[in-house]
Image 1 (cartoon, rainbow, N blue to C red):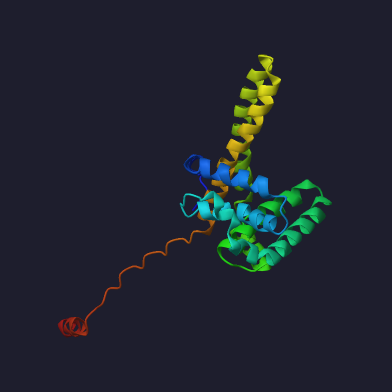
Image 2: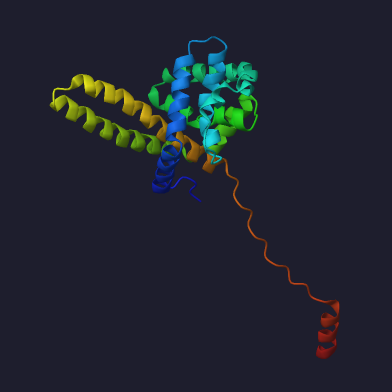
Length: 224
């Protein structure tokens, strides 16, 4: 069964983005404003990376959740996870770009599993690789199509401003649109994470037909 139907996945990602657009923009702005604060910024970075896991549960996000202390408690293991991903992907880049892309897609759910499921770094990487098996290029395609659609909208707006000799307004709108597009990317990550981690419903067992012993005995007597 295909867990990531193309049209439905994109449609739901956009719906989640619109549903949480104000709260996600507020969370992003809070993150940008506080990113320079040592210690706090590691917890907020982890919280921002974990946003899709919260969105996958259908919740409306509280922007201030990025300051929750639970994210600072596991920052040590989070840094270990980040270092492993970073250096392995850098090594993969030495063998051309494609292996690095494949690894990035393989481990794309690792941080979410680490935060949402409480997995250890290596377990999160391993589980992410298993969950994305067979879906890597579909995940890539979904992200690519979404980015292209958003880029077209941005290009039209900036192009109109440039044609009207309003380059400064175009630059401002470009930044605003970039911020507005964040919720849709997070929405896509949320749908991918939810669908790939959802357990398949067990197959219904066929009802067992019980044959009473008395009926069997009667049939044997009849045959005799």
